Image (cartoon, rainbow, N blue to C red; front, top):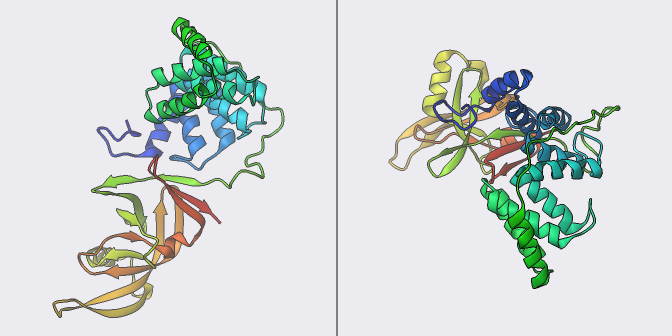
Length: 325
């Protein structure tokens, strides 16, 4: 409920809180959700070992999607030692239960022959099943793309054989995937893996996406991420409210200027020190802020963004990714 925003405001931190409570009571679906949020850094800092732990608990109870996701972590060595045999076992368990994600992973494994001997017939069968059973558009699109690539390398007879195998396939009952915990602490971030990023969900507002930001622990407002703006900018009415609340003092004012409008009217604008900005789980202190005219917009500019080693926007999942220095 918290995660999809239906009935209550979208709140990934709140979602994690309730998912974790249920996960600790051994509910497999909640264990999967906790693992997935740790994997992608949604509502919590990204943490692959923690993701593997919770996905493993769900996988052990037969959750097919958790088995497929955990298999990916073993395939890549994210949070667990890289283990292709374990990845293949988990992909197969998931695929045989009917998970489109597991079927897609297994199909790709057969297509490229990286963790299992290459077999285009098996690849076509599993990818076609994934495409037909996917509930997620991205999963379906990936399966179709890979299916077309495999088909281009097959004869008509091979395609017909793979299609017949797919027609005869039937899902099996959920199977427990016993997951062995590593005896040595896993590497959090292999040398070839980019440093972990914190993901902050974006909200759609009108024709753009905004990110909730708490200013001076006083109010939370929706800002547009604007790398073209030099400073974090707030309209005059927001600045005045913060002044009345006492969260901006005279000592916080850096500079004062006069803004002249097109109609000849004049208005004071200020630059000031923002004591704290909280975005997701990140708090940045002493950020330079600017005051826009009364009808101005809320902009999260360079005075905030430059405090990070890198930042980007995931346009597929609508997440602001921030990499700490």
